[in-house]
Structures are given as C-alpha cells and as structure tokens.
Length: 406
Image (cartoon, rainbow, N blue to C red; front, side, top):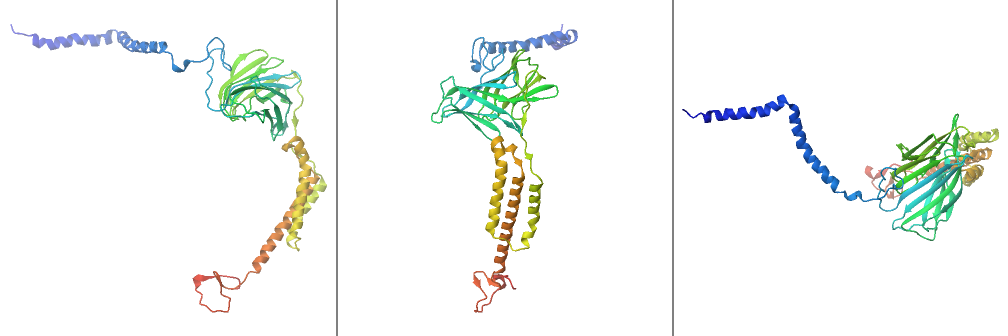
C-alpha cells in the first residue's frame, strides 16, 4: 500500500488550523474580543500598579487635614514657586457696614527675597473717571516685626499708601496688615444698590501666589460675583466657602498687574447708601469772558496789517494769560483733582491774552525773517568766492548758484 502521509499532511494541517481561526469569529466573536482585552489589560494593570506604588517626586507638600491657605476644602492647591520678589499670600476682608461704608482689611505676605527694600506701597483708587471715593482712616501693622509706619499721598487717581521705614531695609518674607475705609463706594440703582471694587489692585509689579477675598455684609448676600485677571477681568474666581452673610473667593497664580474685581448687589434700602460724588469739568464762564475771547480771535488777522508791537510785549501777554488760566483752574484741580477744573471768565480772559500774545510773537518773527531775506547780497555768487568783485574771472555754469537780481 502506497504511503499517503505526505499527501494528506498539508491538507490535514490546514483543515485542523482553519476551524480554530474561522470558527471563533463565526461562532463566538465575543471570545476574540475577550482575548484581545485580556492581552491589553494585563500590561496596563501592571503599569498602573507600578505608578500607584511609586510616589511622584513633586508630591511633597503640606500634610494634615487642614487645607492650604486660599485653597478649597477638598485638595489644597500647591503654592506657586516664584523667583525673586513675590506675594505668596494676599488675604482681603471686605466688610460692608450698615452705614454704607466699606471697611477693608488687607493681610499681605510679601517676600522681598534677598533684595533690601524699605517696605511696600499699596495703591487704592479714589477716582474713576469723574467719580470720587473717600479713602481714609488708614492704619498698618506687621506681625513679623517689620517697620509698619504708614504714609499716604494722593496722586492723579490713586491714594498711595506706603508702609515701612525710609531709613531701614527689610529682607525675606514679611507680613503687613493695612486697614482703611472707603466711603461713597456704592452706586444706587433703580431696584438695588451695587458695589464694584478691585479688592487687591492691579498696580503690583510682582506675581501673587494665593489670593483670597472675603465679603461679609449685615444682610444676606444673594448676588456676589468675582472676576480675576488683567483689567479685562474675564476669569471667574473660585468660591471657597459660602454662607448667608459671607462669601469667600480664591484665586491662585496671579501674574503682575492682575487683580480680583468684586461685584455685590444688595436689595434696595438694605443699607444706608449715600449718593455718589461726581466732579466733572464745569463751564462757569459768562458772556463777558466769551466776548473777550471772540475779540481776541478776531484781532489776530489784523496784527499782520499794522506795525507789529515789540516781541517782548507778546511774550508778556503770553505769560499773563497763562497765569490767569492757572489761577482759575488750579484751585479746583488742587482741591479735587484734574477732573474737577472749571472754565470761568478768568480762564477765558487768559486764553484771549495768550492768543493775542502768540499772534504778536509769530508776526514779529515772520517779519524779522523776511527782512533778513530782503537784505541778502545779490548777483551771481561762487561757492566760497564773490564774483561781484572787480577781478574778472571766467565762471563755469556748474560753479554758479543763482542769487537775487539774476
């Protein structure tokens, strides 16, 4: 009998393997998926187990049940690491009084690094456009023993609060507490009273690690929001803890010149709200000053047709007019700021004198320049040599320049 093993070995092998490959796909597709899942899940489970057993290198941080300052009650946020000067913690408490006064308490932890400084400077706005706020009763202290003498100065739009000592430098991390009051900060609306306040300011040149703002009022706070970031203020702050009479907002990793703007809406007549104070520029001039100014403008074209007065007369009129303008507007500016100036008859008379004086000076300078041009030597002139002398010389066209009388 012939040997048929070699002839049937190949078909038998294919016949034995083919069902094991095809039947699972036809009979039980779930079995194939189960095998693939087991092959993928086993290595992934081993990797996850290794990651769980080996802690990451940056996991070291504050331990214990209390959250870090400025963080939520769940997971404490890590304190950002900054190089150089920075503000690790900025804590603000805004207390709305029943008398309509905003009482502010700021606790600022400032890290001076190794650079010696005399203290910190806080800028509190007292003017927004033509509206004025009253910032007063400023006091300061330090829990770390740093010099905490307070000095205030008013500039164009801010009250500059300087805390420290001019003759003593501090280094490292220091804590300061600044307290002050803001009056006329509420804006009365038709159906509610509104407070818009930048709690930490946008004038800091250093980053802020953790910032927290607490708003508390004598009535329930149902409408209170917070926006953080650059002067656009588009990022919504995180609410840490809410209560019927107090709300906490937190924000981490603020860049320089980024702040937190608080907006609170209170029911009408919930607190005593004094009317806001506005000091826009005012027009207080009458017909007398207006007529003098109009005559001065009309007299300017006539100055060129008559003999011009001396130049020093025009300069004197300019100086006298400037003094009248400063005297009329300077008293209001010095008392209430640059937005509070008024234009009265003295200011109009000063403007009239300045216009006439400037016209005299311009006419005198123009005629002086014209006379100088009329007395120039005429004829053809050679560069560096005068051809009007008695000596005769051949002058080439390229060497000539035109003069008067050609």
